[in-house]
Amino acid sequence: MSERRTTKRYPIHLRVYFPEYNLWGYTRDISRDGCCILSSKPLAEGIVTDFLLELPIIGAIPLQCYIQHQQEGAGDLGVQFVHVRFSQEQAAYYELYRSFFALIPAMEQIRHYYLDLVEKGKIKYHELPKEGP
Image: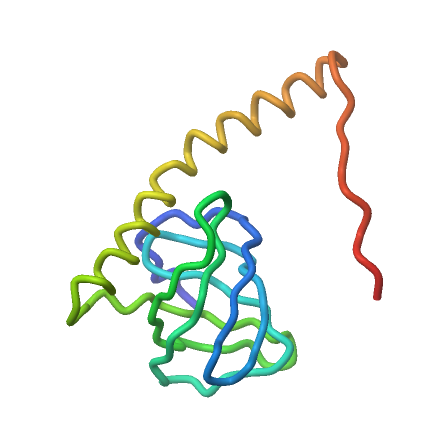
């Protein structure tokens, strides 16, 4: 399968919620135009639906997405953000997301700096323990 993405994806885990389906999940990665969401149950391909995306520091913002595809058995949903907005409020939420996304390269530089310090033995690498079953 050829790569159709036109924007870089970043491996960021953010909580998501689909109110219409009472469905929780989290992003595996995000891009400017969409994301991959791991959920406990699938959603039908081809639907347009609303969801809440929880951004660090900012909080939850409502966005609208098109379910592009789902990976059988894995619970991965490939979603594309719906860019056409009919109200100023909806457009403002998407602009908040785009502003957040624009900061990711700087955060990635900080992570590389952290990992470089670990590699040089100046600090230790730490991870939170895995959540329970």
